Image 1 (cartoon, rainbow, N blue to C red):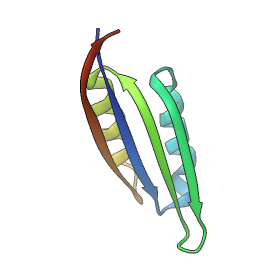
Image 2: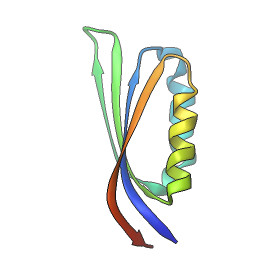
Image 3: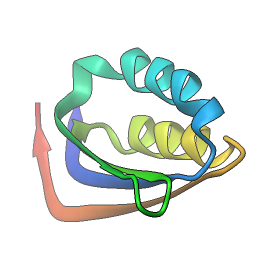
Length: 85
């Protein structure tokens, strides 16, 4: 199975959706390499970066689910390295 490394950067402006976001991350936990969260209290937002090593379709599905949450913005950056896992 071919996998890629990607970073999904997320800005949470609607704190009511954090539980839903965490549930989505938990659903893809087997692919997550690491996660960093930064609460920016001055602006009342949370910034979360997740590094993932997964098949392309799993990354796209995860990114899409995050993007569908109201009040949450997300972008995904992909590595050019594709490996057999």
